[in-house]
Length: 230
Image 1 (tube, rainbow, N blue to C red):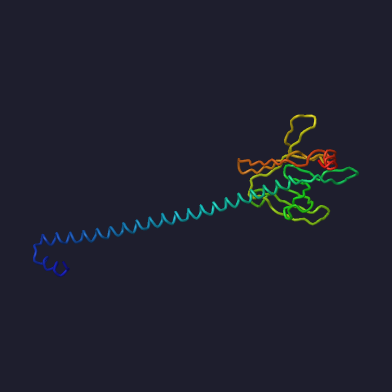
Image 2: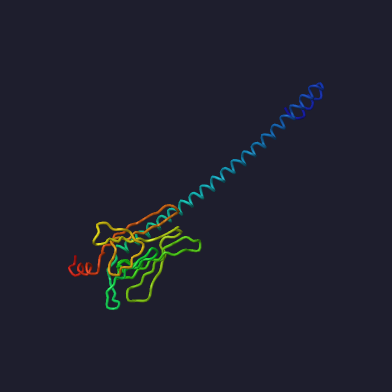
């Protein structure tokens, strides 16, 4: 029924009928507007939910990629330290007529000679130095420097980053005792420890790595082993 016909029928009807038609028409028109408003609100809510889910998904992906990258760099750094320390060579220098090992260490630094270079791989002997340092945020990292023995030129790099604390320990065992102990400092230039332990601390979590020394002991022991080839 079109509007013209509806108006004609309305004109011929009673006043009561006209009122009923007017109320029905107005209520139908208002109900449609309410539905439109509800639809707009629902569409807005769905859009907000979708955009929030997308932001959360992007943040999760970025966080996951950052964690994977951090774990890969940490694993590679552990591999480098393990390779360098296990490739430690008991080279000596002479001071005041006394032979001494290059190996020295304390809680926040370590020095030793190795045939594994961070840059050159297993190509000749290098002097390696590890030192714990802090960045501008107060987090710690491990500064690595090495130079070919007998030269003054050196190269530097960073291993690990954004660590709450880093420190070294050294396994000391007295020849007269059955058990040994871990110490924070190694200043015995005539001996090399059996093991070195490296600690990475994130909050309350301590990640230790114990590395056995392939060549350890006193000068007389290592000299004898090198002479006999054992």
